Length: 76
Image: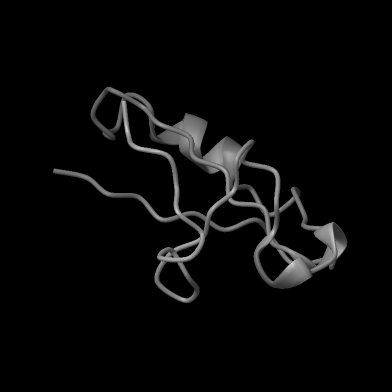
């Protein structure tokens, strides 16, 4: 278990304490903070499943600002 966060030692931009994980740094309104979503796949990306990825990132899914959703793939 990690030790409790000490807000006198843990300061932005290198560190931020949130007891329950819901506090937003800098008192920004929630509507102005981007949401990051992590999706993991434990299999290879290949010709057998590439259509699934094309379907997910088909240009039809949009962010509230109208931009396409984006993704970064890390493969080995």
